[in-house]
Image (cartoon, rainbow, N blue to C red; front, side, top):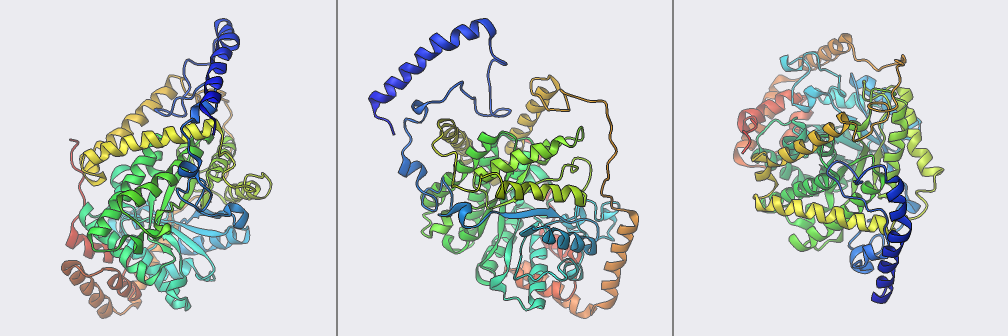
Length: 560
């Protein structure tokens, strides 16, 4: 970019500027703080960036053009000028009928993709009438017990016209089977089904804890899904390798990136060991990142992620299909950054986080409702969150050119720094035997916990300002509408699942579950058997209990 003589001039000029302009000001007034970093344990931010900070940058090797390796500038050659990101608001609460109503509302308001949130019992593989489900039915998302519930959720919504993301992990195979079954009922060719299942169990052991089975059988189920979908539903993303929850648990941006890509490496290795060709399943891998507060760090993280995944797939796995090397990702704005105090401030936080995701080239985006620190979002707050994306798309100009911050001395330097830090963490992971071993040793969890502790201490010591929480506080306690799920809603869902059991053919259900049990024992791909059980109206709990019996339940080991 600059020849050596020019760089020396720039360095000399910066030293002169420091001595003549900056030092006298520092002597008199100082600066707001001694050091600036992007986030807790993040990258240190220099006072000024010049071409000297990106002197080693090679445009072709490090950046390239959009749609070309190493994809730093994006995986599509026309960016958002060709098609905007998918506006995929996360939704789902109470009963399937309530969720269907919310979906129709969001589609009428201009949402371009659906995203399913499931309640805690569903996420843990329990039916709504199970003892373990008491008090949690429909609270954190929609309760799905059987195919009948999935039919209700998508009533009047043609599956060949929407893309659906499902935030489901341990029972992902069962919910995917239900989605496929609804598509079959609607007469939709399986090859036309579009969407994503999260299906990221390693992240569950690290940060979220909605796991069921131990790691080894969990990896088997995941690779079964890879194999089945490569043949049956090639447009459906078989996994959303998620850094979102890792960041929500307290990680730095570099840790989020490293641990997410580390999980991706583990899944690719498991699939190859199961006999799959990397270029058959890798194009269906997708990623899910957090949109956090520091705009420039987030943009750098997204750009570094694309470049790193390209290099990992190219150098470590010798992938030949360009699509195998393209990191495509969904972003959700940071739930952990929402505050219960002065909730209107959350609208602003979400807008800036969404801007960072768009400047970083996300493929789809969820913007949080302002009230999600208190409860499930109301229709009004969901609409405001969606309008935030629409204003960003149509009024801000952020979507008019591709990778608009490329060439910024700061952003390019920060991209390199985040990448370097992430690779250092990945090297440590490799030295511990890979992500699965590092997770079972509790090493990954401890790294995140330490960062979260440091951040909380900074907030409590007022070293980090959270507007409305530890600074700029007010005494007001304004009233607001909150979305509630009632005991009556829970009772209605329990009645529904009991009704399904009464109306179905029990012999067909028993035969389907026994076939699934045999497949689990003999190593057959589980997906066809799960679809058979789903179509017989076996419930989520019944299917998961068969696999619990065969695979056992995961019990976290003690820290090593």
